[in-house]
Length: 227
Image: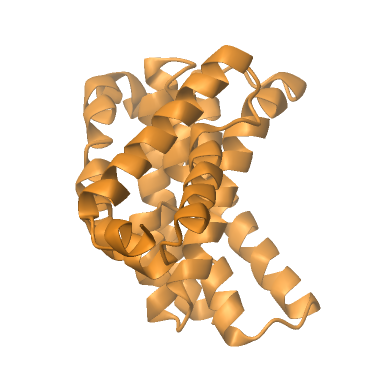
């Protein structure tokens, strides 16, 4: 059975879609932020692969189509930005300043913790781009000699944590300005954070889209300097 499923790309694709849909429905039913659809889908997919005896490498090969869609999906985030740009022009300097500060803090913290824990160069390069979208983070990681698998895991975990704790932190810090909320989500939690920002408002989603792109560019420029 495992050999049959290993040779089926359709099985891998259906498993991915099915696991995510179950995760989304589970979060809707429970209302618990911890049950993020991506996290639930990852756990379910891993459990099914282990039970069916399908190697992870084979599953990833069959799901390469999703990797190809990462870049155009990221570009599509420009749509809400274009729709809201006229309203954001006056706030653009403040937004970019906030994104720049957040990016510097993120990179500085990871670099300092890596030095403190005496991590090697590969782990450091893999963890530095944790707060940018996967399509950009993998490229930045590989350019610095990092391991893409570790980078992908760090990026997904960062996004999930940002989407879970982001709304709570906005309430705690009384962050009610949509542009500030969007800058926080996009800078710290990339695409997953932007999906959460879309639940707040269109302005918040647009700023988050802008922020994740700007944060990605800054990270790509600063990572080689830190390494």
